[in-house]
Structure formats: C-alpha cells, structure tokens
Length: 116
Image 1 (cartoon, rainbow, N blue to C red):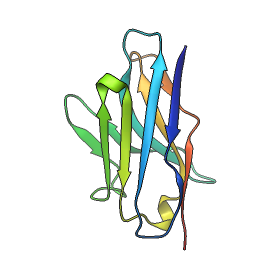
Image 2: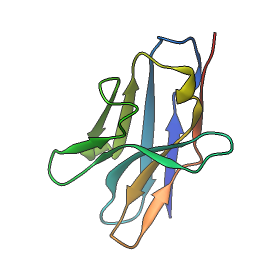
Image 3: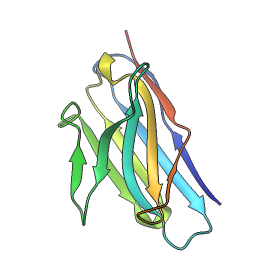
Image 4: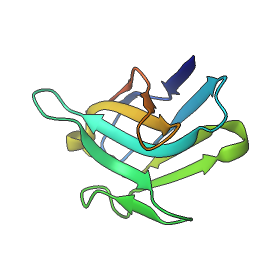
C-alpha cells in the first residue's frame, strides 16, 4: 500500500512564502514524483507544477517566477517553494506520485490560505 502525505500549508500574508513537502511511502518497486496540483473552492483541480522528462519542469502561467518544484528521489519526497504569495493562490494543494502510466497516488492535501 502506498501513502502520500503533504505538509507545510498554513495561513500567510500576501507577499509571504511557504514551503510544501510531500512524502511517499509504500512497498512498490518504483514511485516517481509527478507534481503539485491545487483546488480552490468552487473550481476544478489544476496543475501548479510538474516534472517532465529528465530534469524539465512545467509551471502554470499563474505561478511562473514565484513557485519552484524540487524533489529528492532517494527519499521519495518532493517540495513546492512558494514565494510572493497572492490571495488567488489560496487553495488545497495536492501532490501526486506515480507507479506507472496507469497507476498514480494522491495525498489528502494541505490547505494554503493567503490573506491579510
């Protein structure tokens, strides 16, 4: 069984920073970090940042230049460094790991609230 756990969310003022962490564990041969997604109230889940082939990363236009995704493959952990946060970044943030093209795992999410 695979478990994925996000942490690091919270309340922050506009312009502030947060670092989200995501750790995966389980008895599978391969677990690859896919990326971070978020879902705001009344909206669909959307991509925030993800790893593409090799070392390439992809970011939503709304977070480019402010967010940075990183990972530690040996620890099955990934991070999302968020700077210059805006109220529109308020959402539940989810991370995703994949065992294969057909099998992926999500965490339960961590709430990020940006408000003064």
